Length: 246
Image (cartoon, rainbow, N blue to C red; front, side, top):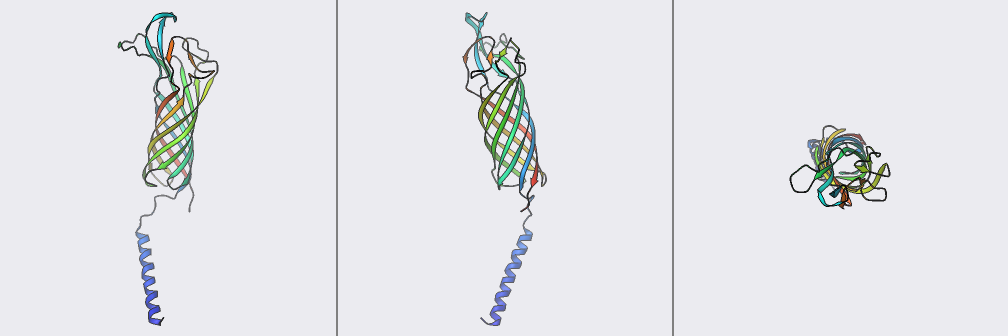
């Protein structure tokens, strides 16, 4: 190769290198470096599906029944938090804790549009949920990122007053059950370390009214007792990221 050829080849390489460098400088810088670990706190509310369905009898033993009623729970206040880790771009695992507190109520379901069998404030109910979940960003890491969630959970159902004998009874202080959950969310990254999450997650929980030491009603004739209770959960969360630089 002549000197002219070598000089031309070197010039071409320099032009290509310069063009690549300029292109790189024109690219927007990432909003943040990928976080390795996160800590999150959240609050919100949840609802519950019905726990049992009953016939209400006169003096608890005479037929025909007065009507039908469902044991339900009021809208629950939610408080919780999680520890997470990004295992690769756009995918994280998190270990979460959720506390939900509410009250048991009876609702008349006789279809007669009356409140004869309604009864409020039977007992308080506290639900403690520990969950292990995978979080997957749908479009990768962006300032505004929708995501999906799937996981498993274990829950403790705890009556507020286990010694109360006029409504809900138990032979044990709490009931432990297994379940699963899944949902969707939207993450907004306000800075390199702080983000907000709006999330809707549906939990499937084992019923505390099934089992050897299960909760049980003090009166009524139960004819339907679902195996599982659904608990939609809606939360607003604040996340702090401990970043790893690459």
